[in-house]
Image (cartoon, rainbow, N blue to C red):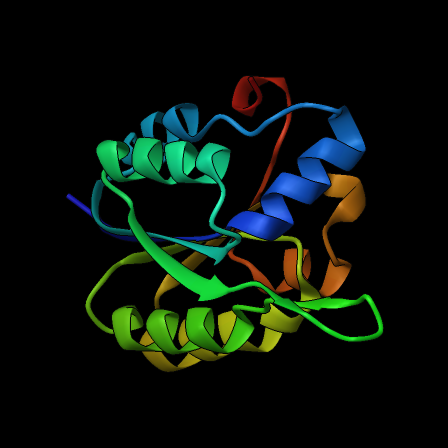
Amino acid sequence: MKKIALFVDVQNIYYTCRQAYGRQFNYKALLNKVSAGGEIVSAKAYAIDRDDDQQKKFQSALRHMGFTIKLKPYIQRSDGSAKGDWDVGITIDVLEAADDVDIVVLLSGDGDFDLLLKKIRDNYKTRTEVYGVPALTANSLINSASLFHRIGEDLLL
């Protein structure tokens, strides 16, 4: 059975599904779909901690499904912009897992991850799969993955 590591860029998936479909992403459906391809040995979700009750319920639900939740504090800048980027953290965790699994699954549309996927595919011969909203996923990320999965009706609430 193939060993799978799953990495979710929660903010990216939340905002792209909301923008493209006006709906929420279905994490349970994702786990069912991914586990059909092997054993999920690691599932990590990366989010921003705004310390609100609705967010805590969501994080609790993800933990109950088997995700490890990684949180960064929400930082509001004086100019009104916000910071809360997990790209480096996700990259480090993917690199650490790549040699121990057969498949790395990434949920994100962020083109910054294209070099990461190329690196683990070339150096570790690890299969890379990306789940994203087609219109909002960088072409470079789609092209760097071994397989791109379109987020559509079957993965929405």
